[in-house]
Image (cartoon, rainbow, N blue to C red; front, side, top):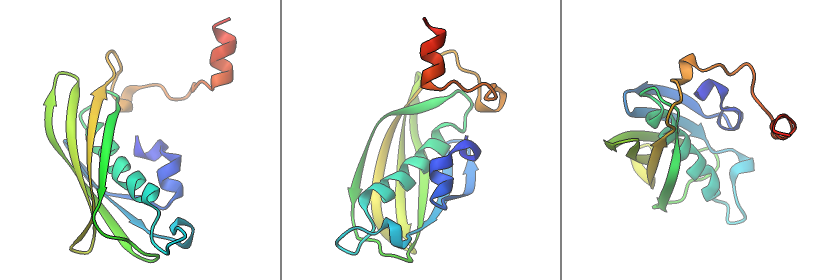
Length: 145
């Protein structure tokens, strides 16, 4: 899944570790990620945490998406900071799950994120799904007419 994530990879996010229900990702805050206050824009911190969440909740096989997420910003990050996002599964129930992600700069917590996942019924694991024939919105609209 991460290999096909152009948004995250385009920002330089790296997948360092992954396992059943876990993931660790790294991102360096660049000049284009800094807001008018001179700190990392919260959207980029959220994106890093959300990507770690996505990697963790898709580690078990079925295609899984976010049902919702919350983030608490604890401390600012600055240009040049290297941030690590560590995602851990808390519980699975039916097709749903809860995951926590800590975003840190060194040993300091920058943000805490909680994601709620939902697996999509009837979807094969990412590794077996045919992604060669991706549909664009315009093709889908034409095909359904």
